[in-house]
Length: 227
Image 1: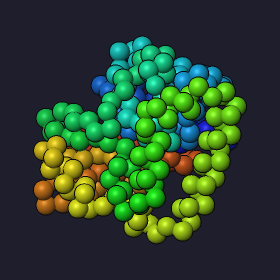
Image 2: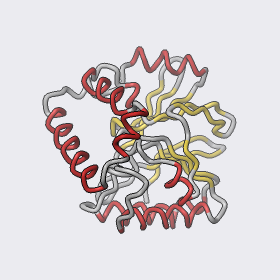
Image 3: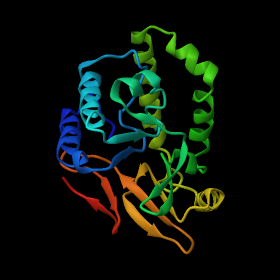
Image 4: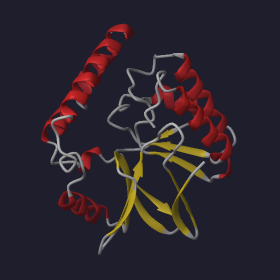
């Protein structure tokens, strides 16, 4: 979703999703990059307050909301989860999706051909570095995050689409390791349902001004739906 102050239409779309679709669900799973960036649970901007209230309105109804960290909001912590009633999941989570063992993940860990990104990911996921970053003043963290996003945008201009997509061999090995016939992930923004010989891979798309990539699952199967 990549929610941010600069794209209020996406925030409105998320609120519409919660109010019109999610309220009828048994559970909602957000597979990362809810926000365009996250600099700490102590941020309390109008956008953050709005999203907290929106998710809380869902969980207070008794509808479970689960979250897997993305590459943009991996610093979302226990405070945000507590304030929203959301449950944080590990980077790989296996759920029972109406009788089908299903592996959920954000998807960035599957893009092993993007060596520079994987190196960056290993660095920023070091717990000591995260603790140190969160000790910095909020304004300084914001400046650092802005510079990182700018550099990342520049780096992507020099990468091919294939490099930034999942590595088929590693993805296959990952699915085998968890013994699931179904994998659902995001990150690459390439909305599609890939039916392989041994498993199905569903890729969530991105959210745009008038489009939300939403996967609905029930006892009859799964499908992408529109608001």
